[in-house]
Image 1 (cartoon, rainbow, N blue to C red):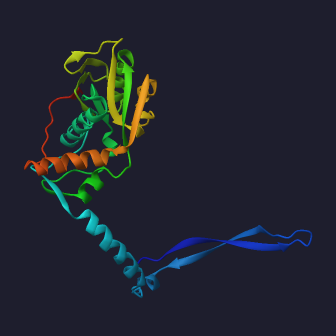
Image 2 (tube, rainbow, N blue to C red):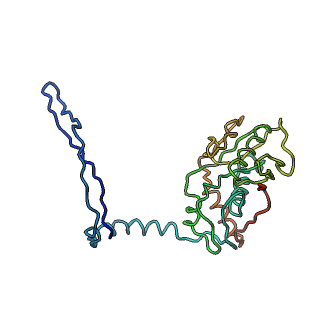
Image 3 (tube, rainbow, N blue to C red):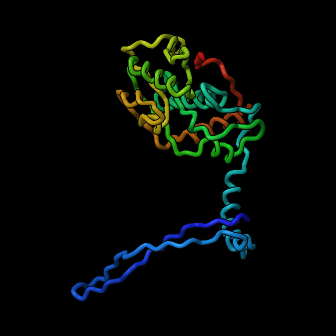
Length: 255
């Protein structure tokens, strides 16, 4: 093991007893430091206690994460400006508004950065879905005027693309938008559109600042994106179907 050093800071605590008070008062009076050598002495086998502690939790976690909930017919990667996995989850998110509004949202938006890994071909476990969607993000339905929705399209182009559903977006090499369609139709500035997204983006994060201009925002904390996708995979499996997706030209950023 290569020798190195860690700088250790030690707080020296002085105790002052005040006879005029019923309480003992503590004050930090100094901070001292010393170098601790990091060398072969730390390579000695442990007594096994840490491993035993970890193993107890590992057994429980494995029992939760290992069950198979569905199957994927293909490898689903995630990248910009669009990808099979981001397209799929955006589509699932868009349809998740049906129990709340009676119909799919006009569009859906997810952040590529929130999808932390790919979905490989074969069995899909609980653990796989947690790896893809590790955050407790919940469904939010935002209502934006068309002119603000156009600004949202600019936000999406500015970051090189995000996961979208029911959108056709084309921009030139200077990031000027050439085409912006919702449901195959041009955006009407005075029309109000329902956007399904997650609470993190609804707060304007990841440069999606146009979402802060929503006329109305309704979030459903009980409907996490992870649970929505998990239910989708499980429902497919119940019907004897496998997960699949494709890239279909939703976002084209000309270089």
